[in-house]
Image (cartoon, rainbow, N blue to C red):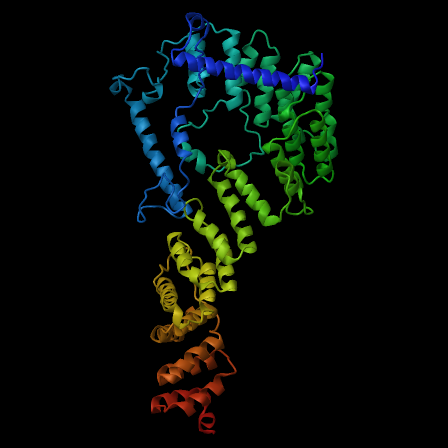
Length: 632
């Protein structure tokens, strides 16, 4: 029977009035203004318990406090001398702390007899040593069942073999449970949930080779079952497909079809995901007709079916028809009421956005589907970043390697799209609290600073480069010197001028004092020396500039290329003004040796502006000849 709109509105209004009446009667009860009959009819309704995690209260408290980007991550020491900044030191610091916890657990487990005091009630199993099983252990089917429920793969395998050696009878139900466990984990223990840092710094690499343990315990358990039904076949097929034993999984699937053994949607999904490994030609891979078989068998597809299909297409993304088919698949599943998930969007991006393929704007289409707006590239990146930092979405970023890749691209796009002032706001928010820029990213930042002549950020960037151990990167040092050489001081910038002079001299002392046996080190070039001299001269450090020139002249074989004539002119003009004939003569002689055509003119100007000593005149005569020096 249909209900019109006015009737529905009336029902909702009546329901609202009944709620208000209930609240009113409860209020009367609290004030003692009620009859005994009301007391007997009203009931106290205790709400159902809401299951919460052990850290729910801490998470609720943490949600009330915003992230402090000015300090280090909470897991590091809040001390500038102890806080790690570079990616390598962060990794070493975090894994070292976790290694200490691992060592403590190892000592506890190896000395279980010393940890017998158990005052806690109820008993907290994780606080006490694990039970170790040997051939002398008294085990039963219940013992094996408990280990399977705890996902203790190695212990479950050990207990199974003990039961087998002692002829302990095991039911098909427990054998099926163990088959599912060892098939899912391929007979290996998963990484312990407590080792957060190891999981974070473990780089997840996509495996494209078979890792299934052939003729292992999973296949032994499968053969030992008295009734090998759909559950047994499904467990083994899924495990083989997951670890890319594709041919054997396909054989088992064909066996199920011959024996008319029904399989569920999850098993079909696992086969669809690896379908591209079964044929050589792209066109033949879709002739497996797995989706058609599902439809004929009356098996409803689910979100996993959509994602498995898109993932299989992503494996053959270079196929010309992959893009078109992916959109057709998306439309077909949409007509079935199956909406895509984040994994679906990921596979679509994998299919449509390729380095050597045509440009695709599907990312904007995906974001429009989520938010319904259209933006430029940087705004798209901001929307993605906002989505990442919404709720607990940051947990989906993966491991440290994927986080680093994410911020590398985000920084690169922001650096090329924003003004340097706006970009540095983002830089100061994320570095080094969350992200330590790689040398490539830092190079883009320094290049942008140099182009936009934002010299006020160089002290901070050079300080960060020291902390990040980037001072041995020749390309970065070259970019810093190039940016410094463009600086022209003013009276209002005395402090900045002093800071930039200190940076230039720090570069010189670091490079000169570097370990010659070090694998990665900075080698001087003529351009770098020229930029250094120019910076020191303009920052009022003529003495230091002269020292650099003397060293470059003395050890010219250690400098690749010649110092630019513009830098030589800059230093020479100051030397002439200061009547420093020794430096001026050495500059002119260096210019001639370097092949600069301006050397002769510089020698004439030097002769006309300075009174040269006999020794300096002899030096010039030996390289230029007495005729040049005696001419007007």
